[in-house]
Image 1 (cartoon, rainbow, N blue to C red):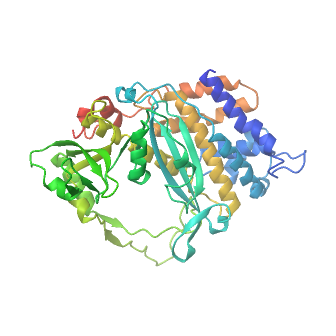
Image 2: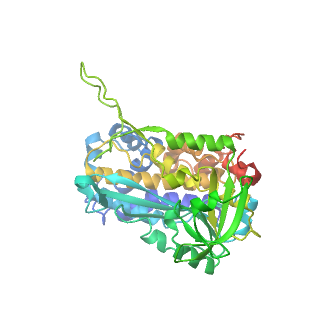
Image 3: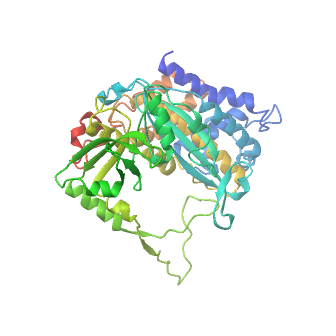
Length: 470
């Protein structure tokens, strides 16, 4: 099926068809004569918060008015409740099961892995304590975090598809749940944080032709080829002062003894200086936000009151980590015949993209920020924003994924400007394929990251791994 046609089918399914089918079973609509029915409610929430993640009831009402429905703000407010959160949760869970991929990126480093190159990471959204029956939080001091949801994503970097977006209790560990149970394809490469790979996982992946790249824990123990047991700090101290790149196979773990490839690159003086500055920097001791997080203007302090200065604290780095600052350390099971040390490091740099992914969803999509203090309204808003961000990701895949210079932040800016065009398709004035084609073509120019010299962008290092450290 043509990609635009597939995108059109999914947009209609989750904005029109499925909301209509679920409006009665979810309890959102009780009467046939209801004006703000399932489809219009979902369209209002998804399109409204795609355009403005901090939209108020009045701004959501503007979306409803563009759909040729005129209601009061109070009528919109009354729609938010257990039924609305149930409806949106059904839609999000169905949408996460849909895989849409863009045109494959032509990157030579990806060609060795026919099963794909995957990033995986998660993020936690704290919720009001009243929602602990829906999503259990981590608890925290005095029960301050009784409710929260952990969202895990698995992102394939060649074609851009989200192969998984899982919601689970925030109390659950990153190493639990369906996100870890879903297997990776054979001949695939995963680039993950150390929390996602235990020694047993490393061994099992190597035995089944599934490759991985990850960081190194500062307290790692390993045995060299002669069988001598080292800790990482002692081993680095033993290296010659003029050694710039070390690429050896060792057996990781005191008992596990898993064969792994350890790569250590000595960093340039400029990079080492920046690392030491970050290790010693002072940071503000920010108070933890509890309960509802509100957006909008902060209340002005009363007359005669001076704003309280936040206390400073020293950023703490473990002693073992400080002794390793001059090295970039990577573990992998990829043979040197497939990837040289510089190429492994360039791919490890790719892991930062999923951190930017969550930064985009939280800072721009505001999945953890809301105006209301009503628990069910907050839950509905979270689900609606997730559904809108999924739709945004699908459009981005078609619009600019094939360009390795792509910028998801700039693509989102284009989506915010053009999302109102979908109203024309919903009302039947313009065909869905035409509207989505225009939206995707709007990303064809200037939705990319500029080249830079210090430090080079990720796409530059993937194209030329020798740029590392420049």
